[in-house]
Length: 601
Ligand code: AMP
Image (cartoon, rainbow, N blue to C red):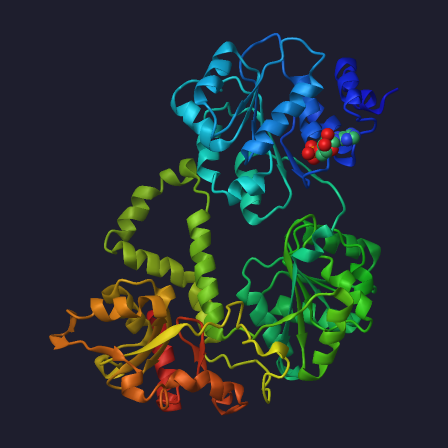
């Protein structure tokens, strides 16, 4: 029997695809056709192009659509006109021995009149790019109220091309009980989100070679002193609020200890090592798969073969003894086309080992600095804001409480309410990190960043395309750096992102702005006053001889290895995330200013 017949494809279609040279199903077809033929599942398939995925959804559609009826029953959305034409053509080829099959290709850049005419004649399968489809919907030229299947092909590409909103509108015209089949080569967070939004409990399949995603792994290392390792590790975790990671240790004892410390410190963590019984290991793995655990602390042996697809970070708390094991470890992330990060926390003597690993994996590591306490607080704050933004509101449940809640907040402005909500969780991090020291190991120079490039901090690339400006307001005017940032943004009408270092002094301040907005800042400040005083903005070079005394040289000083500022924990980040060491003022004033800014955050 023909293998496609075995999968449930009718004779006429099998004959047609045999003519196309399809003798055996490709792996994706083999796995998805039986599932899709049942017609009862939503479906997510991770598949690259060229794997035969058009037939994987096209053949089941031909089995499920009722060609006796001449109204739209299936809608296939894809990102490009080329793909649209190709899918249409393929489906026509597969169905050449069937009667009454009407497939229409709807795409931009071609006559809409022809497409409208074809639709009017009656179609069962519409293959479309989102823009043109929406156009036709807006003309009320198509009725999707009886659509039973929607295919989102190359969903990642459609999102990349900005079709999210169009897709939303198009899908809102289809019935709620249709089945949605989503195909994507990669599964970034946005695709996950639409999968979640449009589907119920989808059947998920990953096609092709697992972990072809090695190119999708970023390798990073942090250099810390041995005694700071655990604290640095926690900071890295805190800096990644959505982390779902596997942490590798060298020994069972280390694994156990780290897991216990993490649990004690309030993290969702547990250990996996050879001293656990099979039952205990299964239990840990079950919790990890279900995401009740955020961090799995494991030895190499115990973690071998762990096959969890959404791991965001692999952390080498200790580097493996065998370099080959690094590949096994890092391969736990970036699976199934996703991207991931593999991190090594090392001491300065281990840099040579990183170079060895680079040779084995054929990829460079990036040296990253341990985020400062301020970086972590900022990251956590915005993660919280993001969660608030995206939280699903259960209107029915909360409705009856709303009048009381509103009454409770009646006295507060919207801004005050927001501040209080944000502070609920944020204060915890502020308290913990308020005196957080720099955890980066001191180095003589940046000899390890070969090629002489500047080392990025906490994921941000160093960028020196700034102009340094002077303003005649400072801390005596009751400005904190945060206040100053706001003051500059508001009056210069620029985004905070365009502002670099802010070096707050007593009666004046130096600050950096991106070169492209330097002129705008000076112009827009011309008519600004502060409590009746003229505000002056000037190029700082005219004032401080190009940064001789101010913080402009702080980066150079810091990398010269002085640990003084680090030890007294006067080092901090300003709002641009750049390290500063405020030599301009006394250390007590510096940290006092920092505290002040946090209080007002
Ligand atoms: P697709 O990923 O759908 O673009 O398919 C990639 C190529 O593989 C196309 O040229 C298809 O015609 C071809 N193809 C798909 N399925 C099979 C099969 N079972 N046997 C041989 N060729 C196939």
